[in-house]
Picture (tube, rainbow over the protein chains, first blue to last red):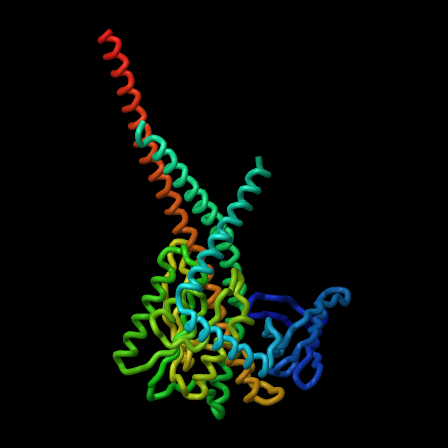
Length: 142
Length: 289
């Protein structure tokens, strides 16, 4: 039997893949890397791209996952990909930070009334819509 | 029959309200399950990244990361307040905001300034109404929290920490104990304490090859670790929100039932009184003839 390693692909939002594999390739920062079992410990960033995992004990079955960047951690028998859920980059992150600041400032400027009223209205509309849906479901059930 | 019609209208209106609260209860119940799943789904990432970060912090003595260094002189504190976007969820936001305010009061008494990052509409509204210094915010997260929406506000706070504008970062959110119980908690995020990492797993080989360089990889890892912590808190807060809403709406539905019962009794009594009165009028009228 061929040697295998355990592969976990996780993102902050969910566990994407978990299983044993014979081989894995990932787009590392400095170029595509191929990992076989008993690879030396390695920690690297990965670029957005496809991760290919050759599933163990199958007939060359391959799992292809798209990751939008993240980190790759390699241990001799365990490989972990900490995938990002969002496309990252210094500029994009910076823009997001500025956006968040601007939103906070805006909220302070508008203070209470306008926002609260709009919010209440939105909540009401949502509640009514949900009620409508439930009504429909009930009718269908009868 | 004086009050009869009014009472009937009143019963009808209470019944309508009850329908709404019952619907909201059901919606919250199903959403809560999903939110709980999401909370659990976020855990493996947190654990993995914590393991790696834990060992890196111990293995790399020559490069102490700024996130790990405690500062002696704390002049300003950053507080990340996680609340829900919507109301009607019992005392959930009130409790966590009270905790936040207490902390802020404590800091103010110690001569420490506070700046706030608000995640969630309720906290944002509350903090800006009360004149807290809000540096960044995120709201309208919907039912599924996405890390993408959180990166911005977190970065604003972390940048302030690195620049030395704030010396500590704390986070207030509501932790999900179980369906009936949610507790507001305040945790210190930065500087990260070594104990928070726990003990790294045994039998692991930590002599890594780094690509491209140790420093950049660790910086990335630390940022992601921090984001994972905050994401987890937001996910947990959402599960708490739905649970709290479910309970609140359930008790509202029950209360409506009680009110309807009382009103119905009152209605029957007035109806009976009216009939009795009419009857006695007829009888006395007949006797007079």
